[in-house]
Length: 278
Ligand code: C2E
Ligand code: MG
Ligand code: MG
Ligand code: MG
Image (cartoon, rainbow, N blue to C red; front, side, top):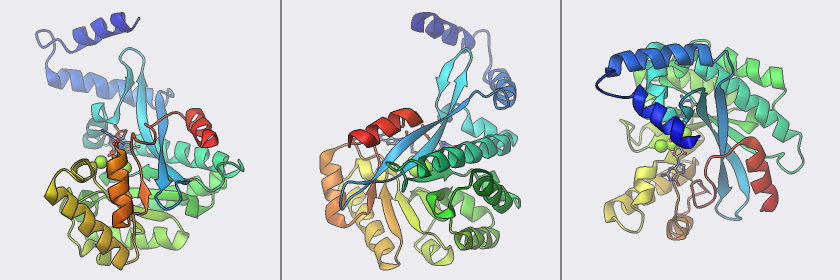
């Protein structure tokens, strides 16, 4: 079956019969119908506290179970959704599904303290309805606000910094955690940590990969951790794949690690099994 699907996939992308724009337009139409059809899925990747190895939370990562192409990663459809505005519907689905899952875990003694992190698109952060959407989801599923973390990118913060700062302040008052994702890859400067009320900084995988191998990557990670600590912001390193990277991060004082060394993003049931086995 995998082979048949593979062949079909090649047909869909055949450059002789299909130009990229038409292909993208078709995919967009399929996504527009696929969201209400229930084709989106959430996978969860554990985040582990450095000092005691315990699970602090998970990051919820969206996938699309396409009826023909199989399970698609966000790189195949997020940009398309963002450009077209469909990311509003996608983001609303992700927020609701992630909060629902977090509430289920909150009632399970083995997972009761697991925080769930949700990625926000630029359009969601700049949407005046965001705070209502968040409070609505929390109320609907009766989740304590401190178990939800919202990940925003530097690029999204830069669109309208004053409005973003006000939105983040409101979220913080609610008790929701705010994290700056892919830190170091955008336009953010160190002043961001002062200007925006954030709780967490996620050091981008591109720097973590170079840890201990590339001197400037190592220095950047060290500087991010020290700066965050100095202003009382917690640090999460993403893309941790080796024990050596984990060890260096621990030495530097990084708080939380996330990456294939611990687990790939998996379905909720598989995460629970993984958590139980630990
Ligand atoms: P991100 O938020 O920076 O998420 C981390 C990505 O790194 C995930 O890819 C994850 O699977 C991958 N990753 C984690 N650990 C490792 C590792 O050790 N090695 C390697 N090579 N990769 C690792 P994924 O799930 O494909 O997501 C890619 C991006 O798509 C995310 O980057 C995020 O920007 C976006 N995204 C995912 N879900 C959503 C969503 O619900 N809404 C929005 N707006 N964007 C999303
Ligand atoms: Mg993220
Ligand atoms: Mg990230
Ligand atoms: Mg990243």
